[in-house]
Amino acid sequence: MNQKVRLIALDMDGTLLLSDHATIPDRNIASIRKAQAMGIRVLICTGRLPEDISDYLKRMNLSCMIIACNGATAYTAPMPQGKRMFLHTLPAEDAKRAIAFLAEKHMVINGFESGVVNTFSEDPESHYHLVARHLIEEKRGLENLMAAAERGILKLYCYADYSRDRMREIRDELAGIIPNLVITASGANVIEVNAAGTDKGNALRHVAEMLTIPREAVMAIGDEENDIPMLQYAGFSVAMGNAIESVKKICRFVTAENDACGVSEAIESVL
Image 1: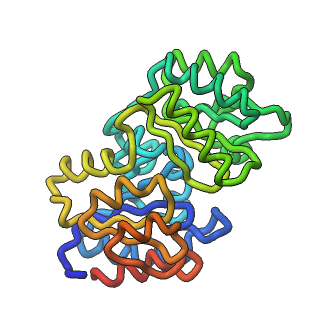
Image 2: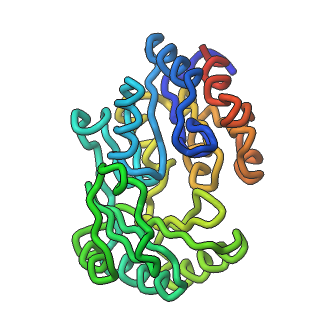
């Protein structure tokens, strides 16, 4: 790699975080700070909610730009100080049809609005983890999900204890019913649904153009299927050592695994 990277986009789960999905290792934090001190912009680009990302960054004493919900929204800095740059919600009728379909498949469905998760689950003890962390409010039931669809849902995050192959079948069936959605995965038993044109790649392009940084000077690091659009956009695409094979195949470089601080290794290579 050369030394002309000016913007670094980092996925969280399987990338920036350890495999406990909760810890940013000190080596990664130190490398982010080093890059920022050299004038490189660092952007967290994840399927997670802005409230979640902001909480991590504040606890680590980091200030980075944020792309959240797979590109549905973005902020200039952690909330509440950061200003929202854009917002893309699912069309109401598409969201309702997707919710009804996924409920029939007995999946847990989380529909995100700003500061709120609307959850449908056949298990009354199933709660989205940000609720327990008191970062967002919770509303439950199909009726609340459908009402949220009318207001505008950022992303549907759905999961079930099915195999990756079964989840792929459900995704393909949903895509056949509502072809204008962006349907992807951030894990083996997860389905994520966004509005047409909403993905990490388009969001990263928007931010890079806002900063007048060419794609040749953008580095992106990820591990899962929902990272592919941003990796395809970035001039320096880096797959984690633990990435799925379809990610490794499209990337120019492969770094160490997340539990071996592959993010730090990749960042240090361009400093």
